[in-house]
Image (tube, rainbow, N blue to C red; front, side, top):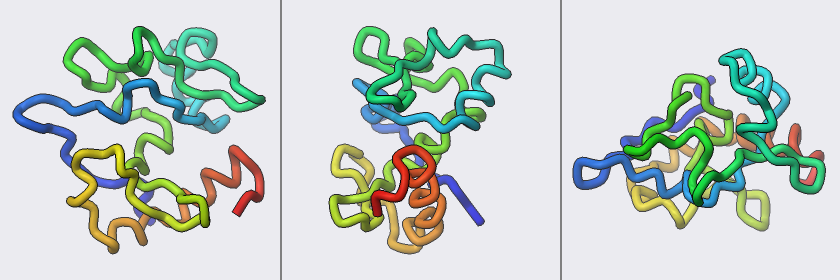
Length: 130
């Protein structure tokens, strides 16, 4: 089963990274372990908010965003980043986040492919809220 959305994040020749600005991306235990295995310390790349680890922002951008808005750990990025711009709406339906400038490039078939991974991710982080 595919668990990430394939989407080119290049707009006008530059990486968009809008989703990496002021991120609140939650992290699973597996995400944290994978990133720590790269040599990063959790206190550097994450903050704990209401009992949930989230990616840390530095100067308004994700800790892992470089000067060209690229992800320094792209191949090891958190599952939530892989699934984005698929998100759950207030009715627990899988939808495309309006924040993404390329939202119109995501097809319903793409959302179906990540539906179960996204719901599993939400359940792992927040419990059975849907």
